[in-house]
Image (cartoon, rainbow, N blue to C red; front, side, top):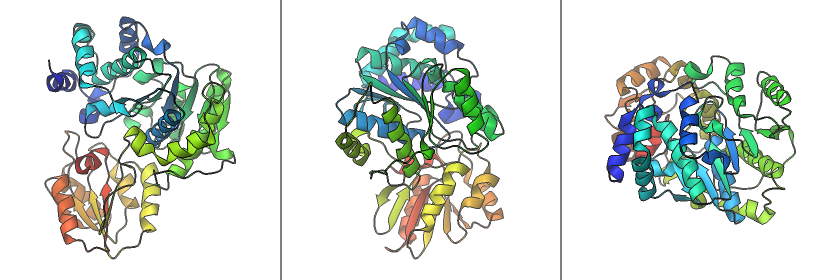
Length: 404
């Protein structure tokens, strides 16, 4: 199989959460452990930082990778989902895994994958760990896919675990309370391994403390510490707390992976250049200013909508699309009523029909027209806008992916 055929096989073999949603979720690490054994346990051969959280784990992972690269470490980075190309998920020093590496790994292990009925995500995690070992990375930043306790990435024993924050998202898998969700994410805390908590609330702090105490794991709460902020090219307001989390994490591992102030400053100022990170309060047009952001749950959108309110404009235009498992009554009230809306459906099977979104939005006082694609919605917003208007594109990672 060539690269295109390999991807089609991976995407089509078994459900993929990015495309299908609930049917792709596996509540078990058995397959991942079998795969690791088959591959020679690569997870035991890499030094890793493991990053979980409802929001900010992608930004935190990319900032950590950027700083460690600036310090001269050969840095692996595993994140999900991808925006444009599957290979974005697996990088070393900001370079995507090669097509040949993906093809060779699948061809070599295809019979095993088929016999064990491995999921898309399980195969991808195996590929990442195997690639990082074969390429001899100094350190790997591993982002959790969803949750933590039962996530395929959770077979690693990292040098530090990081949990950015807890909000209500993926409740059908992780639980319906903040305590339940915190418990799932706290599943990445390993005995004796330090953990950095980015943000906590009264409901979640006891969960973290209990899990850390049970395994004698040192626990650090970044939001409680006085840490001077350092500028970054990731300019979303929500990045302030992510930067605090990053700086505390680097402090915890400084004996193993020392970095200088100069490395930190350069790393934070060049995240997008160093790692190829995109889609976080990213300006995609000027005159009018258009900003794309992947925030897609209440916890993340509250901060983004607050930043949106600070902007100066004549008319606010919002290109909005979501996936079909979103709690619209949770997120739609966060959007401003004094905006023109352009409703669309992201081009994935999980995308919510634009007319259904329009109907739900209307019940929350949000008015606009429907469009048959994200591109059509964005193009119409640009066509209608004056230079002094402001366009926001968001609601889903997949909406943002289609305009980048």
